[in-house]
Length: 216
Image 1 (cartoon, rainbow, N blue to C red):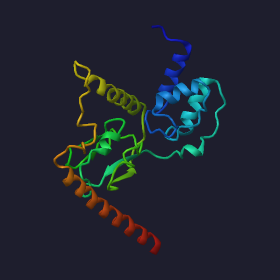
Image 2 (cartoon, rainbow, N blue to C red):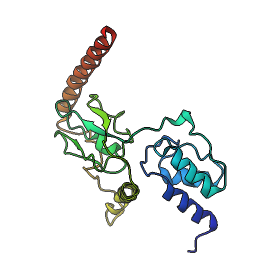
Image 3 (tube, helix red, strand yellow):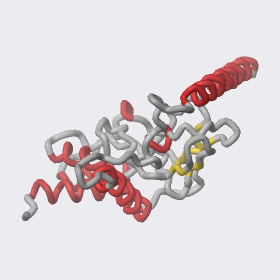
Image 4 (cartoon, helix red, strand yellow):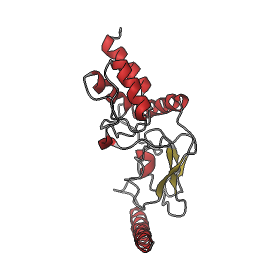
């Protein structure tokens, strides 16, 4: 099917975005934001891209370049997620949340962030039940090649559930992406006890940090 002018513009806008899939723009990924810009949405909603990306989007759309909208976050150096290995309980929730498959690990085993693949989107932080994921400086800049590879991983991840469907149309669970089942699981009590204990330790750690900060 031949692309329309609208589709071609959306492709160019998507290519200009950093592909960090962080959702700070208010859309589920970079592509929907690019399509929204075509429909008239603002070009200044991408904090990871900063003023350079705003300028590129403005040029492609023929609009004036404006300041980055602070409501969507501030631009800063590239940062990546890091798992505190001593506190990870192997719940796999961060793996399920990562949009670019940058976290690896097995249920009840320590997880690890592949820093070379991490976009710093921070989507893995909210679901972590034990507060064991932090954001640290990447020590490098995000490149056009990083963006290309991140888009490929994001798109491949999106295709995986369909590719994993059986011949009868019944989806197959992907243990690398989905959290461990809770219902009808013989180890449910063990996991719940582990999570409860780890959450208590995490709350104690946060409280200790709060006291330390107040004393400084």
